Each structure stands twice: as structure tokens, then as C-alpha cells.
Length: 89
Image (tube, rainbow, N blue to C red; front, side, top):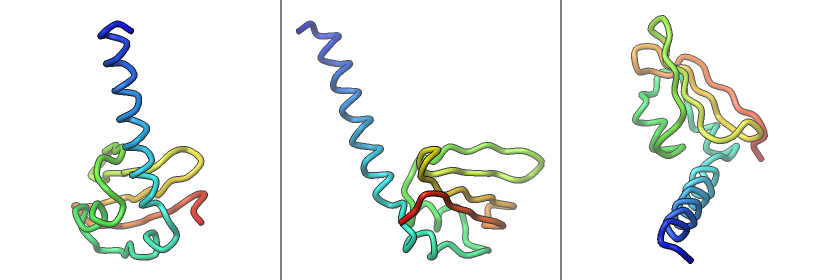
């Protein structure tokens, strides 16, 4: 196998491992720990690092997980304003 194929397989493996760990934090129990007024850092400690985030008009929306199983949190001034979930068990 060529070096570039080894690197590609290694990156794929690491990506899958990251998704497995990140999705492991997505549970109903962890979702219920999220409260209005918590900081982004507090939520990140519960759900894990590197969510997908978008910002608009002073609000930041961050999503942990996939389209089928996720937690979405809206922050205003770095504090939880709203949160929702889909596919948790």
C-alpha cells in the first residue's frame, strides 16, 4: 500500500474514532444536565468538544452529533437560551 493510502486510511480511522467518542456523550442523561444559563464551556464539558456552530444576530447555535442523533443548543451572550435533542436514548 502506498504512503498516501496509509495516511488516508489513518485519517478515516481517526475520524470514525472521534465520532464514536463524540456520539458517546449524546445521551438523554447528559441532555438533561443542560440548563438555561449554563456557559458554552459547561455544555462542552458535558457533550464534548468540537460541535458544529453557526452565529447570527448575537445568537450562536451549536450542534453535537449527526442529523439522526444530536443535541442542539442556542447560546445568547455565551449562555444557554434554548436547547433541543433528536434521537437520544
